[in-house]
Each structure stands twice: as structure tokens, then as C-alpha cells.
Amino acid sequence: MTVTEPVRVPAPTPQFAARARTVGGSPVRDILAVTARPEVINFAGGLPAPELFDTDGIAAAYRTVLAGTPARALQYSTTEGEPALRAALAERTTTRGLPTTPDDLLVTTGSQQALSLLATALVEPGDTVLVENPCYLAALQAFALAGARVVAVPGDEHGIDPQALDDLVARERPKLLYTVPTFQNPTGRTLPAARRAAVAEVAARRGLWIVEDDPYGELRYAGTRVPWIAAHPGAEDRTVLLGSFSKVMAPGLRLGWLRAPAGLRRACAVAKQAADLHTPTVNQLAAARYLADNDLDAHVARVAAVYGTRRDAMLAGLPDALPDGSAWTPPDGGMFLWARLPDGHDTTALLPEVVRHDVAYVPGAPFYAGDPDRATLRLCFVTQTPDEITEGLRRLGDALRSPR
Image 1 (cartoon, helix red, strand yellow):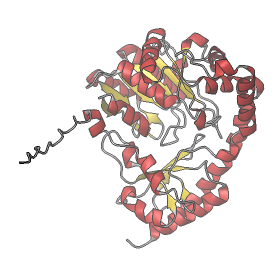
Image 2 (cartoon, helix red, strand yellow; image 1 turned 180 degrees about the horizontal axis):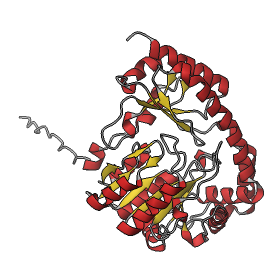
Image 3 (cartoon, helix red, strand yellow; image 1 turned 30 degrees about the horizontal axis):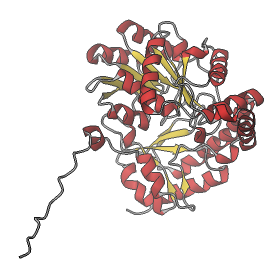
């Protein structure tokens, strides 16, 4: 007689954490996956122009580092970052008006990691975080994963309204304000100096951390530089300044940094030890070598000159591409142009037809922490040549005029 063993049904695995179940992916990444066909003129990404990378200079820096100090370059490093790189970054920051020492800085694996470290160090589930309206998408992701309650600060075409900020801080008691005050992503706008001083004053009087993200500030095509919020009186002990080489050197290096008061910087270093121990040593040493052997400011000036012509090409083509009654503001720098179509348009609903015309943008709705303006869209103007931009806008105009 044969005894049949009972069929054993495996028990289900435990559920994912609530944050992983409720926080969605990046709509920009999703659009880039759909529009990866080479025939698509893609205004959706935030990608620097690869033909402008200083590949020779970067390659030479890696060769020098690997030939001269291979054991050090391929070894573990300190969490805070390589001393040579921190010294160079401190000098650049000081030259731009904010006295900084190497010990003020923590090197991160891209400035996106800095956001995650700050969320870990500062935000408890349920804490309120204030953001611009609209806001950088990946910041919304980072704060949502930390369990924050994200609240948008009212503003206008110039950015945050300091009085509205003051009122919100008094009512909501937030932990921090996150802002990209120079050539903001997605709008391209720049917060005026007087408002920066007012934001610093609110933070000092009300008790608030400011996270000032500056990945685009060196890419200026018009106007004059506006000092960082971190340089204003009252902001010294409560502002974290984030920087990155992604837009001025190369994003593949994954090199960013944060400048923060000592206590918060130490907390971020502990969070980083749990995340990746340290940013890759060879990349840090190569960047330090590049800064020692090359004039990064001259390289950025060459890149900015090219990007400026591409911005101008987009501005020239928008009147014919977008419906009558559309509005946009010319950015003085950065990578993005923000537009609003007339009432009744939904740029998310329009996108499939636009993609069928082999062109793409990012709908504006995902950039909002609260109720979105569905008539808005973001266009990146730096990746394509002026001729490609002109053709892409022609396709966009055809798509928007096509019967639906």
C-alpha cells in the first residue's frame, strides 16, 4: 500500500513595507523607457548633452589616478569623502561667496543620495515637509519614502511666497523646507535675492531647516548670479546646501555633496554608512585630479554657451508649437522650460498622441505635492541640437493640433 504525502502549500511571504507599496516610481523614468526609440525627439529627460562631456580630460584623470595611486584608488575610503576632493569643493564654494572648509562637507553618491540621507536623519513618519509648488520629482519620492507629510508652499512665477511660507510654518510646524531656488526643476524659475533673504529670516525666526539644492546654478545664460540662501544672515546654522557634478562634469560619475552644520552632517554620515559606506574612491580621486589639472569653470562656460543657443531655439519655436493662449517664462539658465496650455488641456491625456508623433515631454501633474495643474508640461532643451529642437517642436505642434 502506497502512502501519498499531503501536498504542502508554501506559506506566502511577508508583505513589502508600506512605503514600498504606496510610493510610485518616477514618471520621467517611465516615459524615457517608452520613448527610447531613436526616432523620438525626447524633451522629457533631464539629460546633459553627452557630446559636451570632457571625455578626454576625465579619462586622463582616471589614468593618472590608476597609474599613480592604484592601491588607494581601488580601496575603501572614509564615509565623509576623500580629503583632496573635499578641499577642492570647499575652495569652489568659498570662491562663490560661502566660506567653507573641507570638514563642512560630506561627499555623496550624487546629490540624490544627499536627499535620502537628509530624509533619514531629519524626518520621522508623519513629520511635515514643505516643498515648492511644483517640485522636483525625486525629492517628492525621497520624502514620501521617509513617511513625510508633504505640503506645497504657495508661490508665483518668481517662486516661493515668503509670507505664505511664514503662515505655513506657524500653522504646520514642519521639519524642513526643500527648495531649488536657482533654475528650478521643473519650472526653470529663480528665486529673487530679496525673497531668499526673507526665507532665511522665516527659518531663523520660526525654527526650520532649509535644504537648498543647487544642481543647475552654474548653467547661467542670462542675468547675474544670485547668492545662495545659505549665505544670508540667519541661515548659517540651519541650511543644508547640496551640489553635484552631474550637470557640469558628468552624471555617470555619481558625485554630489552636502554642506551642513556639524551635528546634521554627522547624522548624515551615519546614515550613509548604512547605505553604501562611502562614495566610490576612484571616482572621487579622479574628480579631484580633474579639478587640479583642468579649468572646470572654462568647461562650464563652453557648455553654457551651447545650452543657451538651445534654449533660444526652443523659445523661438514655442509660439508655433503650442496652442494660442499658452504661457511660459524664459529661464535664465538650467535645463528646463515650463509651459502651461490653455484651460481644458490635460497634458497627461495628450501624451500618447504626442509620442505617436515621435516627440515627448513630461506632463506637469506628477510634480505637484497637492492638486496638480493638468495643463502644464516640462520641456528639457539641452540634450538636442537647435535643428532637432525645431523639428521636435514642429512635431509637437502637429500632435497638439491633431483631431482627438
